Amino acid sequence: MGISFHDEFVKRFRFIDGHADILGLFADGGLLIRAAAALAAPFEDAGVTKVAGLEARGFILGSTVAVHLGAGFVPIRKAGSIHPGPKAERRTPRDWRGQESVLCVQRTALGAGDRVLLIDDWAETGSQAITARALIEDCGASYAGLSVLVDQLSPHVRGRLTPFVSVARHEELESDAGGGHRVGRLPGHTLRLFLIQRVMALQRLWGSLWGSLTAKRADFGGLERMATANERAPRALN
Image 1 (cartoon, one colour):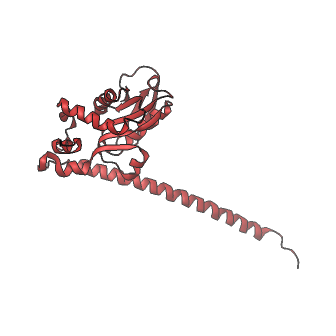
Image 2 (spheres, rainbow, N blue to C red):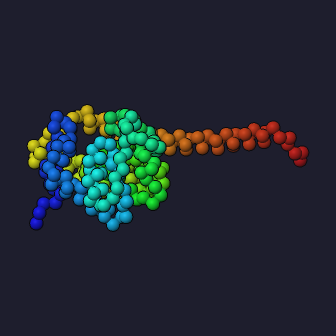
Image 3 (tube, rainbow, N blue to C red):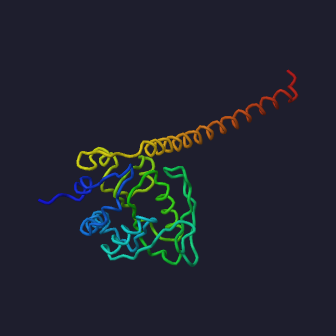
């Protein structure tokens, strides 16, 4: 029995100077074909008509998945790229670097009858994937799901992108990369991602608490006004 693509990917994956070398894997034509098949397989019966790829590695994987599924390919580009014609544009939340960016897609490339599968190599904070989903829906198309090679999402973000599938979790790569000869990520990368995820969680918590506090203050203010009105009202004679 042959090795699964998951096992092959985890075994052959490597970090160089703290950076994931996914592009280096694509030099192997056979592996690229197997990667496309693995990303496409969960969605073969999902009625996908278009595959959208996020700039830039998503272009490579997205186009190969599109060929595998017999679907069209739609690039989702970053602002400043040559992308003629009317476009839908949105700004992303901060990514693992703490940076925002603007993503855009040609409006004529997607329509109401399209079911769109989103493809990328690595999902970290999910900021670009969430924005890409919104762009797809802005154009009137339906989001079919997200398929990636490596999943590093928090459960909360993963839930916002369902249907969602991945080949491997990032923990597997950090523990098994290079056949046991771990190179590992740069500590700053992991720390930045951890801090950003915690800040995002705290922002959601603070928003919830602030909404609750504002509601309580409004209720208290109403009660206070009622008490003041009652004190000022003429009292009935016994």
